Image 1 (cartoon, rainbow, N blue to C red):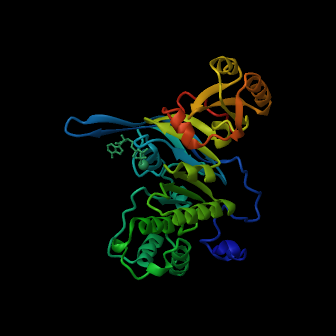
Image 2: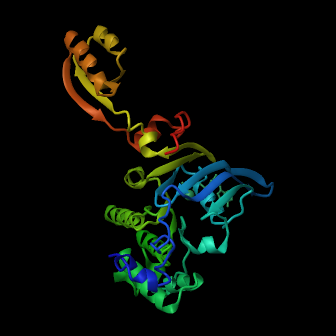
Image 3: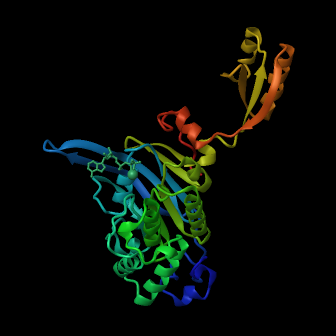
Amino acid sequence: MSDNHSDPTKAATDPQAGSPSEPAGGPPPDPAESILTVSNLAKTFRIGFFRKKVEAVKGVSFDVRRGEIFGLLGPNGAGKTTSIKCILRLIHADAGEITIFGRPAGDREAVRRLGYMPENPYVYQYLKPLEFLDLCGRLMGMTPKDRARRADLMLERVGLAHAKDRPIGKFSKGMMQRVGLAQALLHDPELLVLDEPMSGLDPVGRKEVRDLLIEQRERGKTLIFTSHILSDVEMLCDRVTILRDGLVTASGTLDALLHRGQRRFEVQLGDLTEETRQALSSYGTLAAHGASWIVSVDGEGGVQPVLRAALDGGARVEAVSPHRETLESYFVRDPQSGAAAPSAPRA
Ligand SMILES: Nc1ncnc2c1ncn2[C@@H]1O[C@H](COP(=O)(O)OP(=O)(O)OP(=O)(O)O)[C@@H](O)[C@H]1O
Ligand SMILES: [Mg+2]
């Protein structure tokens, strides 16, 4: 259930629909245009009586391009939320440069063109969702008519139409997430910044939110989000930047990061003698798998020599399968979250 997107006439007549990302008769937008650039961002907090330093972000750089879904990943405490808060000027960075739509962070016009869903949305507990969204719309400078139309539409879009009459204080965690998402989408912004939009959602809810984010990208919007749900990241993100301890450890497309271009194959073998195992180790990496062994090789061409050597040695071939690395195995393989992996090329 799309809103003004399904009605092309709205873009010309509705100020909320007529965001600059929608066709306006001008030159087509450059897909590689950076909508957000972050250079050498640094932020140190000081806590406690002795003003002890916590270096949350230590010189982070990345860019987000028009029309993409960009993932900001990393373990707890890596500096994702701090970076986002600096980008939105909710807190002041100590160093670094940030531009949004080519303007400095904090610029009113740039802020008007983005929607933000915080990690822990704070809402007035006694307000009903429509009242809350109306308040948000007022703060965004929306007209009463647009506020009413968009609030209704967004509540329905995030699956909360049935709970319109309940105070938000009585909402479950997943319902709160949905209110936060409706709020971020309310003024139909060009850039969506979502801090853990899927956390607390049930599997169906996650799928609904994934579909919603993809729908936004299809409408030409740009999205940046953080998440620990790596399967969602894999399904959604065009590019990612991984942070750890306040530093960027890897950046690029998922394909480049997970070496998806160079396909790996796994040959599972049984009855391997020590001698055959030694012979096979020159063709690929060997790992025990129960009573069997798995030989991993790069590319389809690497499979034949392994099979030949295995059969010559009297081994039993149990399976040959292509291997596709996942983000989860990437994080597990490299606990430094990519620290040892080369930074993927700018794609
Ligand atoms: N207001 C604050 N005062 C002091 N330290 C803070 C503050 N906000 C964040 N930090 C610290 O900065 C570091 C980075 O925190 P941040 O919230 O950015 O991490 P994160 O990557 O978003 O983690 P998570 O995945 O758990 O949300 C942490 O060590 C955290 O304790
Ligand atoms: Mg966070």
